[in-house]
Length: 171
Length: 163
Picture: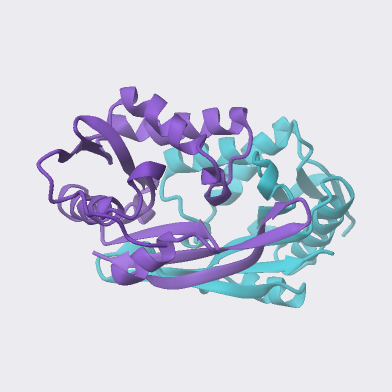
């Protein structure tokens, strides 16, 4: 897939904490064609439940929204851990609106999430899990993430299976 | 000792709470204090209405529990994470083996699962049981638990195919 013009150097690009009001934008990206191929949800109820958990992290200021010309175009969220012994690391998720993909926005939001995780939450590591074939793998490798687990047949749709890959990065 | 296995019931929760708080048990779980244990027990007991949890009893007294965390997502419903715990007084007496074998049967017959997987912390003696029962390691997260500054315990990821 050809890389398009980078938007993150533009004055129209910005980053802020995620608001609950970003929910409709996030939902519309998840509902776009093929987006749910990369997420565990597959029905409207599952999307509703996932959004409720995802947006719950707004209240902790652990989620960032990228905007272009004032409208949300990506969200990246640190899913902070609830238990003290594991609070030095966290899972994170990133989603970029389909029309804004391959324009440097994923890289920008990932780097800012790392900064937030390290400097605000004092985390030591961040990790992510994604399904095999997800194009985010190339970005993660570029950003020095390393694979620590790979589980075959994790996802099943009809007769087809996909694996899941877990990667982490030191902060 | 006569070991029997039945579905977990709400009345089993205090036993689970007590087993978590036995000496050294929390070395091998992510929880660290009474409040976190209460939270973990609440999550575990979500298995009750689904009949996804099993309780082992020795001569009628609960001595161990295992539960499937059946996914709420359709795409992931062919596999399940599970947890198991055995009262320290009953370890080494076959309770864990009986629970795992019963859980595999439940996974296949009731939930039509294809894969069972687990997360275990390095050094946990239960790893021997998992290997003996056919689980295979597929990942290791080195710094998962921070026991004190500079001292970590790894999490191992293991799974087995049921079909």
